[in-house]
Image 1 (tube, one colour):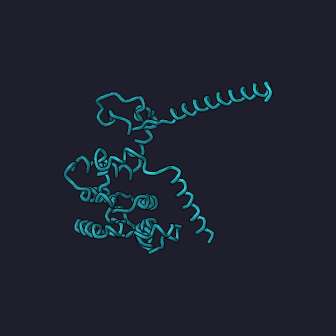
Image 2 (tube, rainbow, N blue to C red):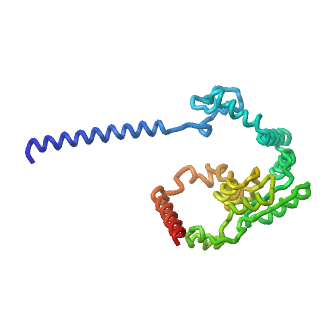
Length: 267
């Protein structure tokens, strides 16, 4: 290599190195800017206690008077919102530490005038839903329940890989149909009993009536998911020590799922 070519090569290499360093610095700065603090980073909770100073990133502090006023109007000027918010606050204040969630649901339902209660239940919790229905009826409510397997649709019909049906069976959970049947029945308050993560979200999405939850499913912790958080210094410390999945592996699974869905659509 001639002296001139060697010199040019060194110049190019030096420029490339500077560009890399420059870009790395930019990425680092971007990452710093991307960090967004919120209420889960706050140790003050002055919005609730009103006995300290707000942190710099406080969401309450950053609100404008106009933004806050606009939201408050949603409670004061919307009749349904006002009725629900007041009923909930009355039950909280009047029965704090006295009522179970079963009793709170009935008390709120009574105060908002909901006489027909819908139950969207997991088939695995059908016995608990039957007991809940009996309690509701004893207290004068009409009850209409729909189980998650309603319609008896195969999981593979929506593109699920058959290998995921080995433990749980071929019939899919059908939260959208649960919601539509409760809508058709004219329920005024719907109660979720143990729907799977994600299935519950779809139910809320399609439910026309106000929806609340009685039981949040956790098959490992007897439907008490907060137990895992209580035990992060002991039995479930792994939750704070390592990520649940590898990003690359998750990407492959997602692509495989999309491929299966496309195959179902084209068949």
